[in-house]
Length: 219
Image 1 (cartoon, rainbow, N blue to C red):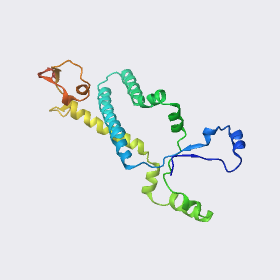
Image 2 (cartoon, one colour):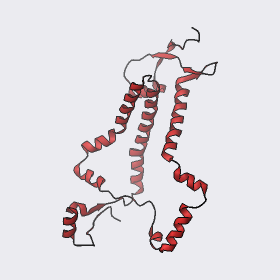
Image 3 (cartoon, rainbow, N blue to C red):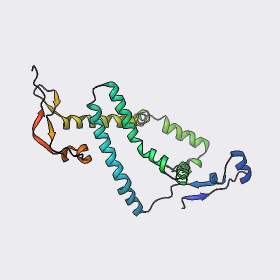
Image 4 (cartoon, one colour):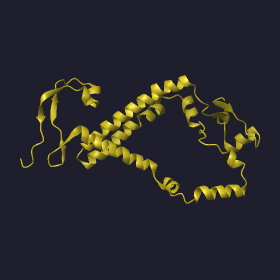
């Protein structure tokens, strides 16, 4: 199955369809996902998926620490907008640097069919009504809950809880009274800019003695 095809309308002549719809010859060229060989899947996994997953984790983890340590509401909103800009960098790069042909193919790429509808198309009206009644108005409460449950919101809340716990685990310690307080701060021994050490504390070299310690209550 080819990923590109030239489809002439069957409901009328090509010239009449172009005149009615305002089409050009390029509008008759169709692009679709036609599968991918295994070696290209591996290449895309290693070159695209793994780096994007690593960048996503780094950005979310560092950005969450950045926002959690921002006290002012206004600065927090501004920093959220800055993180949103970073998340849109890949789309901005594609919009500005991609060729016209690549933009045209991506904008005209047909949606991939996620399910088969041939059986439903062969049903009679009565069979379709019975199936609709059974699937949409059944007494299955779990299915009803799945329909009304905002899954994306639930995933956001789960990730939020995970990163909040990760922040307190890496940046705070549990005091004797049960409250979480900031860990001791250590000065770096090397002031040379290192982007890896900037993002990951495991690669930083720190002094042996802290430069700041959370004062005891009452002091």
